[in-house]
Image (cartoon, rainbow, N blue to C red; front, side, top):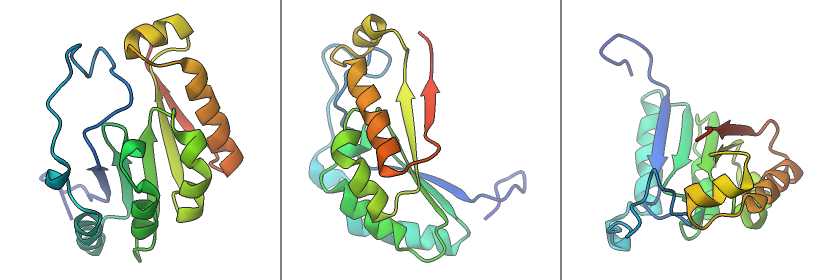
Length: 161
């Protein structure tokens, strides 16, 4: 596939949920947002089918995003399904890192290649302020879990607010 500037398109981002376990000030109004009904989200079958079509058209890299993709029920199953698609060379996931202690090992076994962790600051007080509910120590535990599971290197995006 080519874009309008004749550049090869080989990368696809798939948002698997609009839900998140944080309430970041730049993303979520204090009173929340109206969430999609579960039935309105793409099913795993629909995501897998679309990804198969995309790979057949030249997509070789897929990144799972959200909201927070690790809050999607049975996310490891989705990773396993996508990782088994012939021709898909790279499967990555962007996360806030908080749930990685629970999922990192299983995600690696399921075929996830890379983890990208978004972190808004290295200051614990500022992190709590930005996320409204988060504890930066939980992110550090997630980074450790990803390392232990064998994700090397781990890309950490730090945006200082």
